[in-house]
Amino acid sequence: MKMDVLLGLQWGDEGKGKVVDVLAPQYEIVARFQGGPNAGHTLEFDGIKHVLHQIPSGIFRSQILNIIGNGVVLDPIVLKREIDGLAKFNIDYKKNLVISKKATIIIPTHKLLDAAYEQSKGDKKIGSTLKGIGPTYQDKIGRSALRVGDILSDDFQEKYDVLVGKHKTTLSYYNYPLDALAEMEEQFFAAIEFFKTLNLIDSEYVVNDAFADNKKILAEGAQGSLLDIDFGSYPFVTSSSTMTAGACTGLGVSPSKIGEVFGIFKAYCTRVGSGPFPTELFDQTGEDMRKEGNEFGSTTGRPRRCGWLDLPALKYSIMINGVTQLFMMKADVLNIFEEIKVCTHYELPSGEKIDRLSFEISEVDAKPVYKTLKGWNCSLANIDSYEKFPVELKEYVSYLEDELNVPIKLVSVGPDRSQTILR
Figure 1 (cartoon, rainbow, N blue to C red):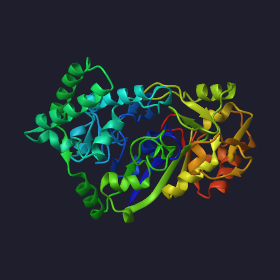
Figure 2: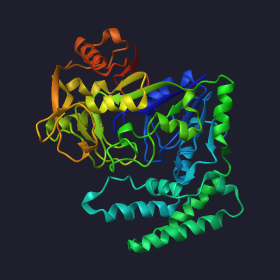
Figure 3: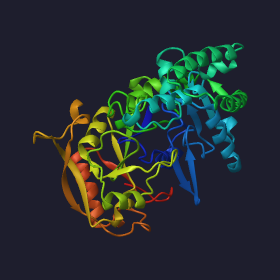
Figure 4: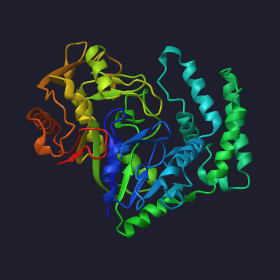
């Protein structure tokens, strides 16, 4: 038995939560392998909208074990709030939610550091969500972070005080105020006590024992491939590996255990925060796209930047992830357009046209070269099969498959669980 991986191929917000929820009945385990509470996975069913930030998206299926893996950075306050929010759904989180003891903890001063670092950048801000994620990963790499297993030790308070002391030294350098710290710590330690009542495990053993028992596992990524710390549009990226390889290190799984790689992309592009975005639209078309797609961050509420689909970027993500199946989300957002554009190449200031994401692409003003296709310009609300798609939407799907050389196996035509067309 092998582990399938589901991840985003753009700059995040592709709709991973919805797809995990749809696919979940096929699996016995759903596992998060990286990222933190800056990821907002939105699920809609039975007329109710749910946003999960740290808990895997299989939590609403009682038969599924949900694992928060070692590659995740966890905010105990946010986690407690999320679990409290699940109470009305009678979810037995003590039974179907487990957390790696090796996952790293976000502490209050990580959030202060995040704000201090971002403030110091002035007009060169990277667009951090200020959740403390970057500084937490810094401490992890610097071998000074606290991990979930540490909360069970007798000297946790001592370890905490040592780390906070280091953070205060840095914050004093930035002249960043500590006024909010006392209240933040009160919430933090209350959440830590709750944290101790959860199922804290050596998750790498649980995952690999599941392979031995022939259980089906789905690894759920956060953010998107173009925000990967190594291969994204650096420095405007997240602080973890958002790719297939990150599923191995974030869960303790051998690369030989990877099965299908499901790559999710929107029928257009969005991005939150700063960084290059060649197909970004600054006109009424972009505003219409944002309004039609309700493109506002589920975690931050920030308006997302919108633009046409970028094929060179999508091909790049498919390549580095080894994608075997594609899932196209939010096709319905393009219902309002008579024409749809797709970027096929970039034109550099020199006049050269390229179809690759080179190292320099983040540094130059690359103009998109577009191919125009006919839009379907009608509602997809009552469509329940691929055969009923408008011919123009079928042509759009076929064109993308020919260009990407990977089959598009799922098309989403609305936010609800039921508006998901499998091919």
